[in-house]
Length: 314
Ligand code: 8YV
Image (cartoon, rainbow, N blue to C red; front, side, top):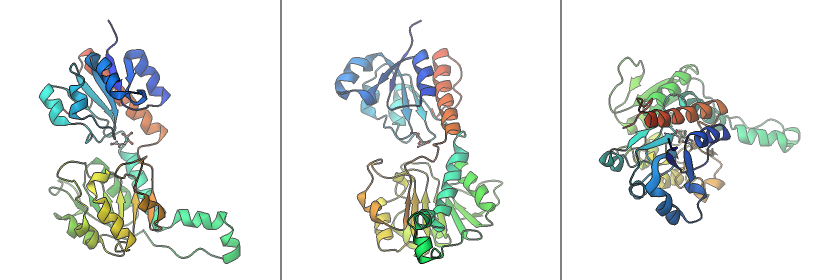
C-alpha cells in the first residue's frame, strides 16, 4: 500500500524525522520556496498534517487539503488549529498531553527562581570580575514561603502547584470552578488571585475565553511587588499592557517563555532589566521531546491503521 502523504509544517528532530519518512511521504511546507504553488501541487494528496504547537492550521490550509483526515500536533496546545473547520470536515485532531507536563512545570519554577534570585545578573557579576572588584552581589528576593497564584489549574497548573508546595508557598488558584479534591485556596476572579500573589503563574489553555485575560486590571492587582510567569501562550496576556507595566515598574517583573509574534518578539522586551526571557522551550528537553514525537507518531499510526487515537482532541 502506498505511504500516506503527510504535510509537515516545521522541523522535527532526526529521531522523529527518520521514522516519519519511513512511514509516510513527508512534504515539507516549511522548506517550500513558493508556499502557494507547493500547496496547489501537494494539497490534493495530503491525508495528514504534522504540526508543532505554535503552527497555524487555519481554514485556508485545511481547504487547500481537501482529502485531509488528521492533524497531529506535536505539543499540548492546539490553539493554532481551527477546530471548527476540522470538525466541519470530519478531520481528527490529536495533541501530546501529559508527557510534557513535568518539564513545563519545571521550567516555570526555574524561571521564578531565576528571576527572583537574579541568576543571570549574578552570573554576569562573577564573569565580569565585579565580584572581585566590587564585592558581594546586591541582595535579591526570597521565594520560599511567598504567595503564589496559579491561573489555570489544569495538568500543568497542578504540576506547578505541587512543586510550589515544596517551597512552602501559600498557593491559591483560579479556574472556571473549584477543582474537586484540590486542597488549595480557590479564587473565582483572576484579579482577586493576582491581588494576593507575589508570583502569578499563567498555566491556561489558549482559547477565546482566555484571550488577554491577564490585562491591565490583573497587572494592576499584581502590583509593584508582583511577578508574572507565563508558560502558556502569549495570547493569554495583553502584551502591550504587560510591556507598559514592566516599563513603569507597576509590576516587579515577568518571566516569559511565550511572546506575541515569536520568535521575532517585541524589541521593547530586550532593554528591560526586570524580565527573564526564554525561547519557548518549556517542553524542550531530549526526554520530553522524544516522548512528544513518539506520541505524535503513535497518533498518526493509529489513524492510518484504523486503531483508536491515543490522545484525540476531536
Ligand atoms: C512546544 C508547546 O514548544 O506543547 C505546546 O503547546 O507549545 C510546546 O510544547 C511546541 O509544540 C514545539 O514546537
